Length: 501
Image (cartoon, helix red, strand yellow):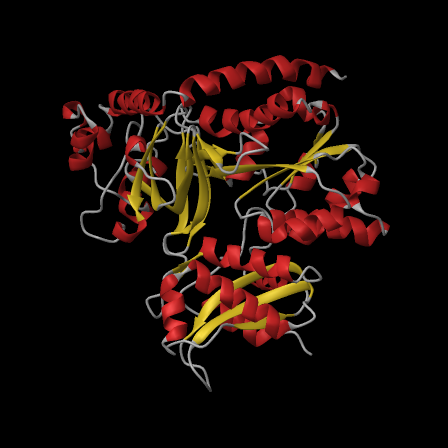
């Protein structure tokens, strides 16, 4: 047993006790965070503008602080970006997490000294929770890799600025730096394919035991290893035992990733965002991610069907229901207030409160009133892949076809297969049948001959890689939306990357 794994066990037990303490008192934990946030921000510009000094209850807060997206919060953020202190939170941020929005262009999300533990202690606790439950700590004595964006940071008004994954590289504790891969120099390479080759160079001879990254980019890394060596990943890294991921649903990628690895490994799902670390998988035996109710974020939830109303219903943790889709709203010690991060979640447990991410509030298909969401297309794909085990998936996206050249409108599934199903039409029918089971509105449209059954359009190999490369978004945490209500993505893929039969 190495020194890292030796000391990890008692620390993991301590974190487990602390987690159990706050998770058994969820409403009280959130009320404590709420009071702390209001008191600490009372004298900020935002606090003064919204009467924080008079807020005593959550009901007061809802009356005085509206729901905002980034565009609505931008005037305050711009003041922070230009160097003004005490705007959204006390002082100035420690960092800006730089991200890109579909409508907002570049976004600068503040990370304050107070909010740093939410981001980085939560990532640590996700791993320690796994150690405590399974007893497996030996991976900490070997190589650890995080497939991420560049750690190079610029400055805005003296505040270090970069991608969240890059900022994270600067927060890796000293005791782990000795076995962290890749090197700083390699991580700074902008071209993702060149970077992957360098990562393979640096890791082939290493004892890699934990690999972290979003599944499609981990798959690219594994594919490079196989292409270079002709071997499965398990034969190169026999002690590889833990895969940490976040950002996308793992299920569509699971079979192909494990096939590339050559064995099943434990996985830890996390839910990090530039705006805050929201949840992590705290058990290998139970579904859902533990919502972090004690790390500086006060959560609100809006029923999805109510989100776009002028006065949406806003609920605190004690008011949510199981199995219902909610838009996630955060208030945090990073200075985000009534902030809609754009994700939708569903509670699968209240003891403790665990969630699954079901999609994006603006990523859906409702060209005909069907309101199909990401969770539904992913579950349909999982069903079809299980029914056709010979098929292997790389990636897919879904879009409506409102004006086909012939026949009725339909949903088009643009799919890159590693191995196509033997009967593509039957595969498409399985997708359609399951989607109809999951979404009654879609079923009604098919039954009423408003839509025809969906069409699967196979794409050539590396279609999604080439598409992301054409946008300058290959690698890091970038990913193709699972579905959209327009054809901006589908038309480019259909024009340039359709597989030739």
